[in-house]
Length: 365
Ligand code: M6R
Image (cartoon, rainbow, N blue to C red; front, side):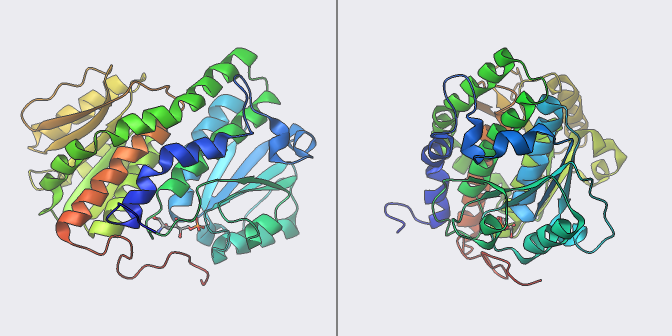
């Protein structure tokens, strides 16, 4: 039931602090990840993994894209990410020491299951599922499973499934990284940041009214651009997907560094540009991208770490977010973009929970 909420999507956005916490529960201590929570054979199966192949669709694919940044940075293990419908229909190569990681909220997405079944024929070290539905086909057919504890997700636009997938993926990354030389100190530092997530997401939810106000600028627009760098690029992709799905506004996401290589030609006063800018070493680069947009009359909406020193001025709207750890930032920064698309859709009067042409679970090709 929706309870006090106008839509399931809004309820599910607000449930995130709770379900992120539930997804952590029993899987981390104060300082490290409990590897056996991934499965009794986890230590053995993860010890010889030299490559991770991630397969998923839609929002789950975006979670996989974030995970690739984490896996290569923290575990130093090469990682590829591909949408299931591409992977399954091309000639692909899978090494024997590959961990085949499928991400799916429903566990019943036809293309994702087909990719897993094909890969099994070819042979790999182990199949890991990140899934929200116990007993689903994906869970039954995998060697290791991390269940996201998001609870049923009713809104077609995925929200809490995504942030719990990211939480699960980060815990998995730490377990894999421990086999690959991650120091105890670094692990403890990141686990501490994971524990802070529910509070930080709560702080973002407190910005709801401000984000609703910001959303008015999008209501009469036909196009929008989302920019991010590093692990925030997939967050930009996910923000753009949310806006497309429920408000029917054309939204494109680009890695900020690609701006000059084409999309900058589109920017004018009718093209709002949304930027996710966490406080890390890429922020200075991002600032110069912002100037490029501004110089062309583009209106900018920047979600920035309060410590990042991005100043509001004419045409630059800044939403200050809590200071967060660079590794967990993609989880926190997803939430304001969910709220933004939600409010734009409400203003436009679309069917938020059941957007046109879409189904919750894509069980056919
Ligand atoms: O159940 P799955 O995670 O496998 O579903 C994958 C996509 O169909 C799903 O994420 C879709 O893109 C959502 N509508 C996104 O909001």
